[in-house]
Image (cartoon, rainbow, N blue to C red; front, side, top):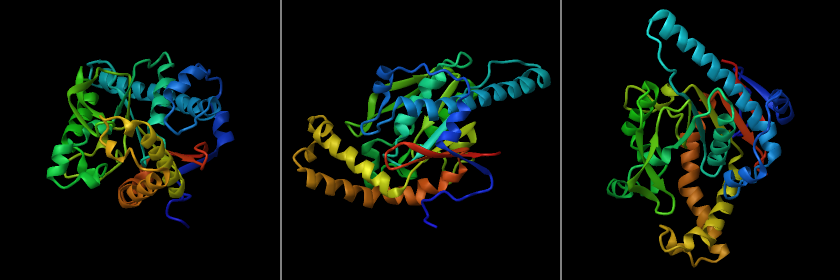
Amino acid sequence: MRSDKIRHAAPYLSFSRSEWAALRAATPLTLSDAELNELRGLNDPVSIADVADIYLPLSRLLNLHVTAARQVEAVVESAFLGRPRAPAPYIIAVAGSVAVGKSTFARLLRTVLSRWPDHPRVDLVTTDGFLLPTKVLTERGLMQRKGYPESYDLKRMLAFLNGIKAGEPQLRLPVYSHEAYDILPDKFQVVESPDILIFEGLNVLQTVSQAAVVASDFFDFSIYIDAEQSAIESWYTERFLLLQRTAFQRPTSYFHHLRGLNPEQAADMARQIWQQTNLPNLVENIQPTRERARLIVRKGRSHAVEELWLRRR
């Protein structure tokens, strides 16, 4: 069996798209076409049907999880400790390869979850903000390994997650610019006691760490976005070609020097970057964490979700 296929592991329940869609029950569709257009990624043609079939059942499941987690927390804090407090934010991790559609998935999930009256405050944080600055990566010889576990400020990431769970107000996070390909030194994202935090990134389910804890110790639910490696490579190349014709043309872009490539040269460059950097990271660091997720979302070559695997426990 190919290594990028999901194994039929006993802890998982498998759902076809139609079986999963039936679990939506009466969850209303409140997202408009205009809102969906704002949330789509560059080459991720998600549709209203995808929202209805995939995201609404997932939002219902997560709403049930959040409600149950709050009830358990109330028992411990109030009944046992006798010191009731506001519930800690519920943290959902979204993991997967470069170009698999994590960002679009996380943005859409944030939107549909925020429509539930039980938890209207939903924040989204990406691990890009925890990448080491370009200067540091260059000094350490890690620019070609950007996105690998060692390219992140793990100490700062863990401190943030700990602060979220502890209920600390107004946590300030670095902001990453894809155009500058670097951390912006004077810009910050402020996260202030959300009901739910979605934490999205390549290696969020990693277990290898010199720290006493790992990021996943703070997660209440985790999702892995999966697809065939060949499909992801194709999506990466498509996105690279689109960016080369648009964002790379701006003088402020880190990749401005690639603006003059013709389509064939740009495609060759994209495939080279994929083979040398992104594929090894996927195979060595990201894909091995897949079956640590509570939910695996499997996409077909058209980007549409075809199958979902839900861990029983």
